Image (cartoon, rainbow, N blue to C red; front, side, top):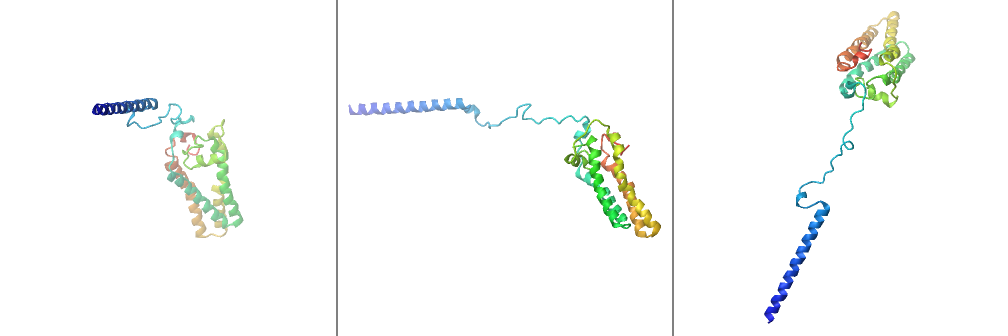
Length: 225
């Protein structure tokens, strides 16, 4: 009798454990279904895929002229385009300083002012405004100071305002000529020749064969036509 009772108790305990295990498994399956888990979800990372039209990269804004949107001028071209101009300014300042130093200070200040005026009077109408397609880098610098302008032909704007650069090109040769006339020296002659070569030969050649060589809209720029 005692042994039968013991066997009945052990069987009832075993059945209770089996029911408890089945209940836990059922709960686990319900949780997997609710959370989207389960065996079929194993190994799949939780990745948020971009939604079309929202998370994807927006297309570039229409600029009217395709080449100026895509061309990016490397930094070495910008340096090559600006270094001769800076050299011209320095040589011009030295020549004018030999006449009278206050004139040289005025010339140096005007050189800087002429660049800023160029940004304000010409660059806002250029197709390369606010892009890295400008070989001299003005397309990046001008927007920091001046807003874009529309409604006028760039060729006409360039032709009307390019005269602001004339004093930087022609005042130093006048000063050199005066110096040579009243007191000829080979130093002044060398400075004058160096200035002329940089201003009237190297700068145009750099623009033609380096800076503006790959520009797709150079036919619209008076500097190249």
